[in-house]
Amino acid sequence: MWVLVFGQSLLSIEIIGLGVMNWILGAVILGAQSHNSTIIEQKNNRNSKEVTTVQLPEWIGPVAIFSIVLSSVPVVLISQEDIAYKNIAQITVTEEESKIWVQQNFGRLTALSLLDPTRVNLILPNLYASGLNSEAEKVIRNLFEMEPRDVYVNDLLATLYQNSNQLGKEVEIRERMRELSPLDYRLEGILARAYFDNKEVLKLASSVEKLGALAPDSEEFARAKAQLVELQDIP
Image 1 (cartoon, one colour):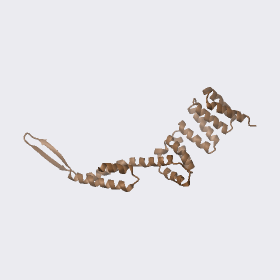
Image 2: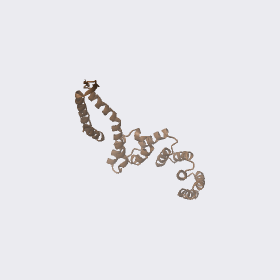
Image 3: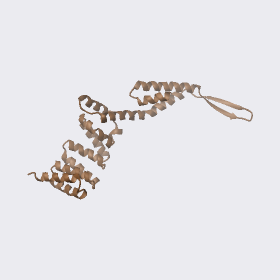
């Protein structure tokens, strides 16, 4: 029965008093049981059985419960972080109260969440909406330093530059992405859009030509052609 209650205290670890009470209770129970426990050895002889009892030391119980608590610490920390991550990902940031909520929960995140590009991408909109722009940029740059050849991570960095109107840097990163995946027409289409935003006519023309070869029937090719015409018409 105590094992079930102890398990509940791990799941509801935010209720600190519940966890402490159950840990202490467990130590008392195991300590009491170990005091009365015996090891029975049966020795079979031809005509008789000899039974020997060995008393276990009283410190066995507290040591056992301490080992259980110690081994549960990583599980508790992961559970707390997972709750904080979900709090950020699922909330709709509108008022000041929700922004403060995101800021508080972001402080509880560790590398477990912040070194996973997919998990980072899911919370980025709420980080920006909560005024955590510099924190988001730091997280993305850390990802890029660790995985500079990961297309997904490069896209996060390029999008950061796009949102902060650093168009030249965005183009540089998206050109790197093309080198990493040269046959992906969708990446080429995004690069064409970056050339258009940065008003680079010659590079956009080259991108349109490549899109025509990779995916002549795609929306990306049609859009890039229209963007090229628009740039060429500018005096």
